[in-house]
Image (cartoon, rainbow, N blue to C red):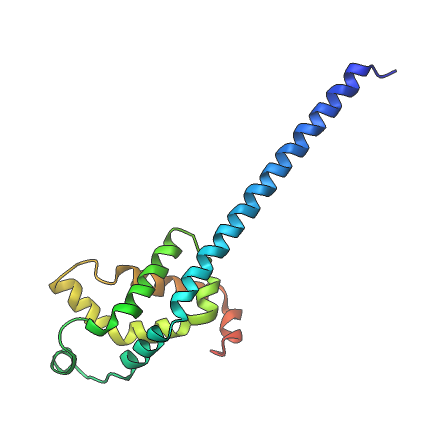
Amino acid sequence: MIEFSTILSFIQAFGIIVGVAYYMMNIRNTRKTHELQVTMQALSLFGSKAFWNEFDELMARDWQTLEEYHEKYGRGLSLASTVFITLEQMGVLLRRRLIHPSIPWDLYGTYTFKLWEKYEPVIMELRRDFSPDAALWVEYFVMEMRRYSKEHPESEVLTGLK
């Protein structure tokens, strides 16, 4: 026959297990909620009219050499404050794992490639002449988008790249 104290021990153990499981679920839900809040704030940066107007203007610029770029647009990326600061912020969020790479990739991955390819020479010149960390997080963001696209080739089908 099972003693009363044994039954109480089982009930206590079960209560502790249920409490720990509830606590872990609560932590997980809190983390997911925080991740969603950070994601929504980050994506609101991409949704602004100023961002896309500036992006369009950056992509419409035309030059063949850095000297021609300087003659037409001056040194650096004066116009690019909204676009490049937004991409810098996305790079930091990705580095700190506060946002999953699938989200910006699904929405904006290919745009970042085009922008980076176009402005990489200008950015490298800025690094050489002014600040070695100019647009460092933009580069990190682009590299993470490239890595993600290689690891998830099915996403390229969904975004129309293949």
